[in-house]
Amino acid sequence: MKVRADDNMEVLVFEDDLSIVQMLTLFLERNNYRVRSAQRVYDGMCMLTDKTPNLIIMDWMLPDSTGVEAIRQIRKDSKYNTIPIIMLTAKTTEEDAIHGLNNGADDYVTKPFSSRELLARIQANLRRLSDSDELIVHQELKINTAAHEVTVNDEDINLGPTEYKLLKFFMSKPGRVFSRDRLLDDVWGGSKYIDERTVDVHIRRLRAKLEPFGYADYIRTIRGAGYIFSDPN
Image (cartoon, rainbow, N blue to C red; front, side, top):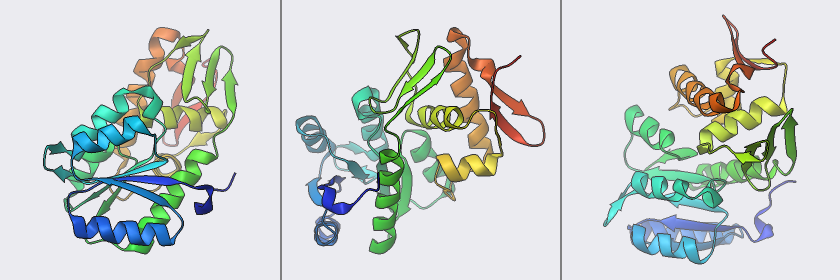
């Protein structure tokens, strides 16, 4: 399904700079998105609980907390794991970006920013989400992408958002070897703030989550080539 703005997509903006809020609201509404905004994490979390948005734009520095801490709170509830979160921040270092992405953000845009680029990032994140309405099965390991659930013999596996996206990508294309660069492009959207070391870290985390269920060895390392999802024998 192709995501269209006229599908009544709603964006929830956590941002305390009113000039940015006004600009984003005007621009996104002109592109047929509905917008709600909060200047504090507390208020934004109340809005999130009241009604789930299609996408979140998150500032880093907010009066009562940080955007990173807000993302951690959001990702603790599995029903919010599928919501794309784009960090919009003045923090421009690679370390800051990696910190945000590793704590649950899906994308990272630095201020000052191009409205057209941000719109393209919003559309790309929503498109990746909407392409996942199916059940993916490998033996007893199952992904219900509509419900964002991973199970083995009907027992839930609690994965973080990046681990989930990695497993979904692998299980959608079993038996194929993927380089780290390819995984960066397809799972992280080619973010310039993510390097190959981060891919390896998330692979290790995913294997650790799958280990108690007997599926860690299904994600195999192919020396000099990358990773493959296949039966270990």
